[in-house]
Image 1 (cartoon, rainbow, N blue to C red):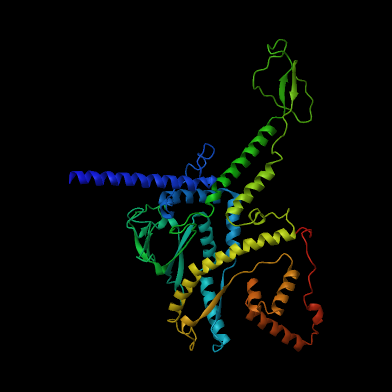
Image 2: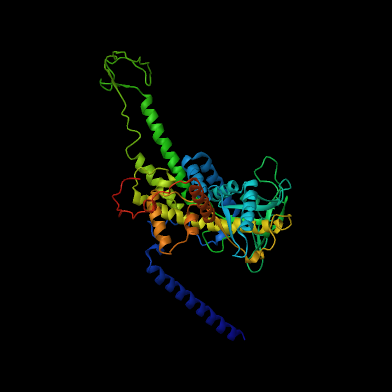
Length: 490
């Protein structure tokens, strides 16, 4: 048995050595096909911090806290960072979304409007638009935000309210991983569905000392979690401006360095330089760094052997503006935002380039709005309806069940750089049955039914007052001229 054991042991060792050699050879062959997979003296330091950690392991609580702290610092102290966050949240949310219901032809328009108005009044009461703007700002700086559905007893009728919770308050009470289904305060079932969140009653950084275990698990049905994910299997958010944090810091440091250099040069009105030999023979006795006042508009005589020299005002350098523009452009690219929006400067853009930049930006806005509807608005509407049925007279009778309801959220539209060209395009799309009036009005943040009712009322009043309508042909959108890239600057 000992001999057989030695034979099998020797064979197993030999087989393992062969497998290891094959793996090594295969890895070498695969790396040989990609220059980026090679490690050399030139790229060794550049990729020294590359790792193979999972999404959740790479975003451990300490890492996310450091990123959040630095991102919040930049938003408080960097004017460009604060402006980008404000612009992005305002463009995304605007004055707030509005509900537009479609309950079918059997439901009266008055019943539909009554529900829409009730939801709009409730949203205004809880200040939903402002909370959504704050949620977007938190997603930029913190990478995530939590919305807690609460009961506000001061509200009349539906008492549903939304309380925003910072990422610092959602943590695991037993460390990073309490179980395999617990990722820093987010707990899952066996299928990967979020079941509940651990939410601390107080912020860890509040004036009152927060105790780690002073919190409770909250069912996921009562929590809206909106976070920025970049990898599969990621369950906590990373700040959206994380790739640009060092660029923000570099931008401020460079600006301060340029200002310091300019102030230093301007502080020295003149410097006395000796023309005598190094031994100082014959020169007037002047102590090193000695200063003397210069009276404005007066002429003075320099001591014998000395002549005044004025420092050259070489700061800010001619490359300062180009450097700042390049940094802001790179920062904006990480956020999916064009330079003209990030800097609020379109002086160097023409009409065509502005339209192209805004098309990409508005695609990003549309994606963000879709995520916000899925994360916040739809769950809130379901909860609102659950409470509204218990409020007498709030929901009209005879409506189909909630499962059969169709709705959309109407957001603020974007003003066109050239309204006439947009009107021509919309008229052509509607006339060719490639777009609807509802879709066209939604782009401007308006309800097509309100527009039609208002136009009908205006036309009826025109007929009543005997006002002659303008020539129909003159009011029709005219074909737009062919545009090119040489169009006047916007």
